[in-house]
Length: 232
Image (tube, rainbow, N blue to C red):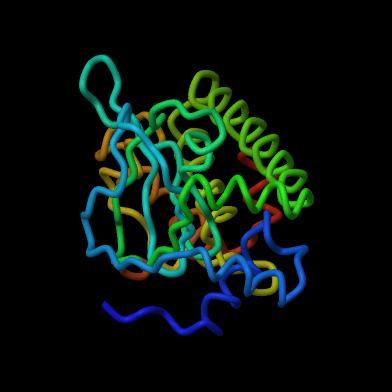
């Protein structure tokens, strides 16, 4: 399979929080240790509890991060798109993967192996600093998600899920935020801790109350400030 053009790789790396402070010549050094791989839709990239020696950076497409509950139900923790990364924890502590990763939309990835990543941390200490910031942000986000799922009613759970998607993969336009590719209603249910029927009903209510506009798989939060104020 052909490699992605170097210029495209640099463009992606500038969007990755842990690399965004580096100069272009430093990014080229990082590119030199990456490997490009394409994944079709529904591919399973990582499996919970397997050994991990690779970090993944999303160049294009969407993936979902999930775990399986004791009852065998999928719980979706996050959806990731261009510039996001995953798999770094196993590189740092040497332990098994903590979640499953599945492709929602065909995706291109940049892979960095453990030894190369640890070498980069030693050569560019600012990567470690930025990584700590990202991990702290993810921890705060997880706390907010747990609070939402445990304390809010169905409307609050679904609205909170839409808000997280807007933050993760949304595109800001004036006061609105567009989620170009909304996950399936079953995936939304797995994110919100509710049923597919509840997702359908509440999406209809949000449309009727003019919080959102939905056209196919594209969802627009019409007034993001109002949405955040009323539901968070």
